[in-house]
Image (cartoon, rainbow, N blue to C red; front, side, top):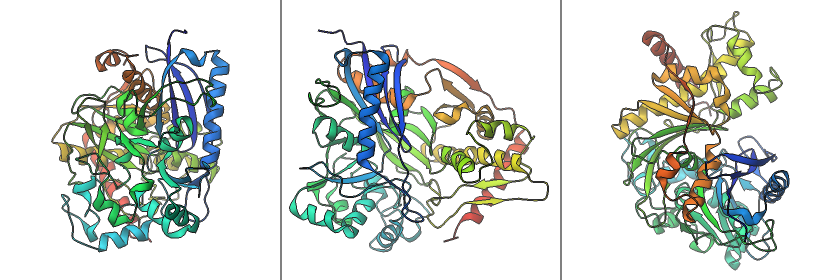
Length: 510
């Protein structure tokens, strides 16, 4: 019998899928990544092909094993992490998706959310609950927004006849992308608490499907997966012997991508915070074993649940557009030919020249929750050139993070002294330095920047004893780089006040 030397992580993201193998030291030894197609049927609609994603997942696993020459028998367990709210319904007998997956960025459910907001009493902690947007906040921890899965399921049931027919026939099942991957790997229909908490169908206190929310959205319990711990020795089954691994490997970890990054950053204590700079930007704060219902436009989410332990909750601020803004700058405007070029261009000028970019392409997420907002570039003069706009693109990510950071401190009463960071955009020195400057805290990058996949691996490895406990994992965390604030206070506040003016002008466009 082969010695178990590695834990594998499937990282199913918004733009690509990866498979990574990690050692006991938490170091990646081999990986493979494949992008998938972004489908835009009409303005505001974003879809993925679930069959393509599953094919890519299998190919990533095959290529990783091929490159590393690691045998599947050497893998102790598998963890899954995923883009969270993206929703798919498929036929449980054939495994065929009944429609493309509706992506978290998709806006088609705006009318459904608006109708729900107008109906019924408001159950809220927030002081600015306009039109009942926060009516389900105490139950779910979430505002009514196009972001979440529940309204997406309702849209699919209402608009795709074959889905309505399959639900009637008892053959349809739903999942976020973790559930889709797990079902294909093992045949088990399951999700974890972190992903379930993003559906608007789970009760944030009980961590179970909420009958009142299922009634509000018309979602039958027959299509919903079982909610399981994020780290569990048995909940997700084992890989099929005739599947991609050709052997039975336990699938023992499952976490939504941002909660996985929290876990991978070893943010296990109340008050620990991290920010991930990927397609979007997601700041999470560990709030301990009790959910804090936000009064400042944040999301209350399940952080993680280790089998046999108490659940850990988090406050989250979600920004829809971060790294995808750089992609847009590259692909739609053609000002740069590769993403890293934006740094060089932005660094060629001393400041933004008074230019601000509000990337409300999918409306504004936390802390505003305004689906009627749209993107704008403001402050243009004859002096403005490509470099100032490039700088405004990068700074927009950091300004959005500060809005969330301030809301988080108000909700939690915790004065955050530093921020752990991860994700692809941390490669931008300008962006990270400006983040430290605009927040006025130290920004800290770990040596292993792939913390999302690492968090899924840690959750999986803990369940099978590959790592004994969280203390052992903490020892793996090591500092790679730290950025300290250098900006004068008056300059910092001038920048931020002008940013807030720009945000107000983006609202109410639709």
